[in-house]
Each structure stands twice: as structure tokens, then as C-alpha cells.
Image (cartoon, rainbow, N blue to C red; front, side, top):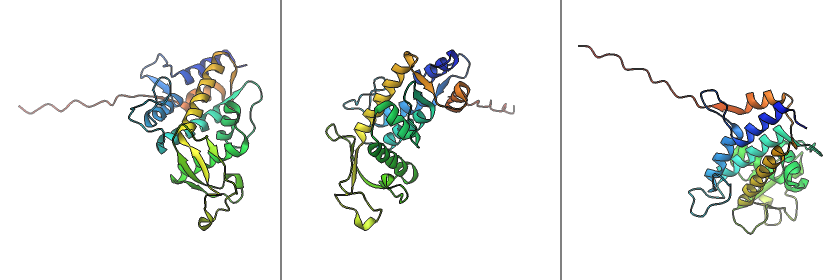
Length: 225
């Protein structure tokens, strides 16, 4: 169970609360949620896709921000019982808070690598076959989150085909991360969320909090008479 100081830090981090000092401060978690929702056309309060919103549920930048949120969640938090020991933070977040199986988790992590490193739809990793994918992405309310290939892709560009392609629904990816956000808030409210960070509450505050500083514009020099 988190200590009172850890509980306070977790609540402030997830809820986007501001410390009393000036300038105002907010967590990187709050900033990422805000940016992901704006880019993917979601309600800024509920996270649900909004009809007629400016963003697009299939926006790659929004999806990448949601994937970065998984990185942060898997690095920072764990449930009180049964925490994942998966190798990547994305895997840990998806296992701990969404219950995804390893092949689906690895495919999502591979897409995160493809987006973050090259902004592409290909991730080649011969040493880890579960991370070797070429992707097709969609953004609808029908397709599942991950559709794994019938055959594992061998990493050769000329061998890409419909049998070895991995399909990921970016709209459902956003929905999944939003469900994880709801789970985090619920677990935190019930003191069931613990910090995974070695540095505890101090690291959470120092590493993931930021402030808005107003630029001081110098006064113009006096005009000569």
C-alpha cells in the first residue's frame, strides 16, 4: 500500500492537480492526456471520441502520444498485487492494467518503436521475432485492437503480403489507453496503485512535473527627448 506521501503524489500526478506555488505546475501525464485527446478528436474531459471534433481518431501523432503514455505508466505505476515483470514499460502497462497477452502487447510495442524511431509502419528486429512487424493501421469502431499475422514476417521487404501483415486499430488503441487511465484513477482512489519508480514520490514529482513560466518582456528603453 502506498505511503501517504506517495498517495498524495500519485493523486496529484493523475488528476492534474496544481501545487500551490507559482508558477502553476502540472504533470507530464496530464499534458500527454490533453495532447492525445486533442489530436484524436476526443472529449477533453471524458476521453470519448467526439463527433465533429477537430482531431482524428487515427491521427498518428495522437497515437504516438498514447503510446508514450503507456511508457510512462509502465515505468511509474504498478497494481498492488500481481505486477508485471515484462521487459518494456509498454508491455507492463498493457499487462498490468489491460490484461493483454504477450503477442498483442509485443505488436503494440513494435508499433510504438516504428512510430517513435522512424514515424513508419515497419519495425525490424531479427533478434526478437515478436517485435518484427509490418503494419496496416485503421481507425474504426469495428476492427479489434490487434489482428496478428497468419504467418510471422521474416523482415524482408519483398516478402510482405496479406498473410504476414499486422493490423492495429488506432481508435481502439486510444480507447484502450483511456480505459487504462480510468483504471489508474480508480485504483489510486482506493489506494490500490503503487509507485514502481526507484525514487518513489520524489522521483515522480521531479521527473514528471513541469511549470508554465511567463516570459518577462523587458521594458523598452526611454525615448530621447
